[in-house]
Image (cartoon, rainbow, N blue to C red; front, side, top):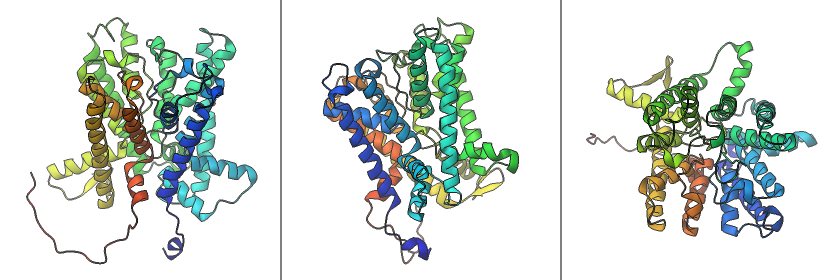
Length: 446
């Protein structure tokens, strides 16, 4: 501990500032005439919105990516997505590897914070594997999509589209090049595209720590408590959400009804997976029924898993809160998962993350109802939750946002990607434990 205290830098502040600088740089590049097809560049607020959405791997767009941007502009967005998905510290470490630079203790602490790892032990080895996992998965996904897209477009274009959508979906960003805000609706009943993209989203959303444990399983023959909770929670959310969407949309003439039985299942599966937190869609979101929209809002708020490319409060946070509620109902003092007791610090942190997220979504929704008058409340709540969860799904509000509304969503996307707690730690001047404890007090609850 004494060694740790010698370092005066604050990892949360460095991460917040790092993401902010990358966003500003990306926004400046998108304002250049070379970035857009009309040769004028994006207006500053739209450039800042797009850069934030890309860096925070959200996918909300105020202009259509496929038709508005030149190849240069699209590559800027793709680069921001890759940095945002992996984290700028992972990228910085990659360049340090290239030049043979040794990773210092400060940098290891930053990597620990960026990857949400429990300790700095083995953190450099983990970063190396993260980079390898990312390259391999994105290339395989890109080539598979290239094969499918080559039936619909020239091979070179198919390859570019395949790699772009593989990178975008693995990093849970949701940007697409299909034009006119169509996302992947043209492939709603295509099993190849649906399953490949779902696999990319899930792999990007389970977290690199879980991926690393899967890779090491042949040697270790065990999974940590964290990985087990991620598997169970993610699996249950996908299975039950697919079933509910299938039942809720079965007779909806605008969504599932016209599709074949296989198409109904594939569309339901995709809409269950994408809120965690990719943002691509194969059904028109505004055509979904209200119960389905509320379910998607819930899924977007929960989001992906810790140490992943996704946002939200995270699956482990949700599972911990459910465990705490269940233990309280059964009159037990401890929260138990897989015969392991969850420490109180984890429960308190889960509660703090969830309430902070709810507070942000509530405040942003309330403010948007003022600035975006004339729009449906559910549409506004959907937009705010999508931004916080860094999902990118929209009922069509994003292109119609006012300048102040865009600023609110920019802040929400940033808070959702960096994390409410990280921002709170970054702006807090002193975080020292109290030198004494007050006597216990009791209040009535419920």
